[in-house]
Length: 71
Image (cartoon, rainbow, N blue to C red; front, top):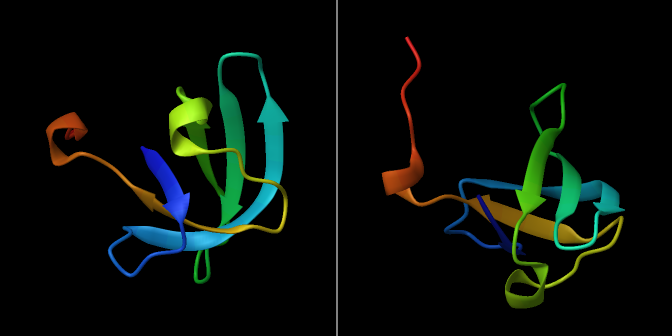
C-alpha cells in the first residue's frame, strides 16, 4: 500500500486516526467513510512517502502486481 495526500486516483480516501512510529516503519489507522472498521496501512519507507499525523486526509493506493486473491 502507498499512502499519499488525498487524491481522486486513490483506492480509498480517509483520515488518519492513529499513527504509530516504529523506527523504520510507520503504522497508520485510516478511517474511511462507509466502513465501520479502519484500514491499517504500514509505510515501509516513510522518508519517501512522507510522514502523516492524526487528522491528516490521505489517499491509499496499491500496485496491482502486489494484489493476491485469497479463496
